[in-house]
Length: 420
Image (cartoon, rainbow, N blue to C red):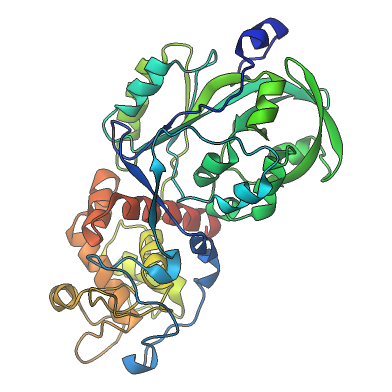
């Protein structure tokens, strides 16, 4: 415990106004510009990695019932992510969703990969929030309420969030769990898996939560939130009634920025009382013996990264393959003419396409045994194996959009967690 400040009645009296103005910094350091909405179809990704590979005649695999993929360097995969549209501009005041579970359940936006959890025990000032958003490389930030309270007589860290906006910042599997977000929007409290176990919480039971005031709330359910310092979540209306510290914490996404540099700059802004927890995990790198013939897509992604771009995490290839074609379910052609499981434009394929894993004849863009290692080769030439900003830039070169890079890195992190 100890990450958040414990509330008193006096403190709450000056701060218990509705928490509906949580800041969201959008794409870019200035916080201006529009965010991209990602259709809910992306939540189906993890289950398809074990599908059998197609390695026969390309005509048998093309047009496997999907929509044409979108345009781009390696056209963005409509089969995996659906149509994309701009959301409200960054910084718009979020709407309180208490008592409106239908809206909460339908408001799933793009997954944002958090790099850091920050805590300012007395709350983040407007100046601090602005300064954090101006750090070079910070692409997104969200703030929320929090405090140390008691539940069942034990100290816990609880945060008060807007389900609509916070949903984008949790692991993909939880973001897609409609029941979780409906429970939170309905005024129930939800918990991390570890807290649910340690507190012996029972779904549907009522518990007394004590902050600056006491409330009896129904426990909804547990989930792996990816935030080790957070035990319980409540919505904004409950946050105000419990008297949580307003805008006490935040999540920051800055893909490609050195963690040491990012942490140093944030620590200077937060001051000596601020806390910073690194959330960015190292993407797994696998070594596969030469000559191994992959039997499924997971094996293919691992072998392709290992043999054609040593140092590149196989999860990056897995994420690109899923986003571009749902692992071969949508082979194109896209509106720009991109083809195959990794959606290469013909001109790009002519330069980078190769035979691999015992394939013979001209490189076949429709054959995953050629397409996936060719994508690894292309990414490697762009410096992807170096990681960090080089990886970010290589993915950007694959499809020239920041939202695409963030989507790939987020899904790659999810694969890294789910396929250890």
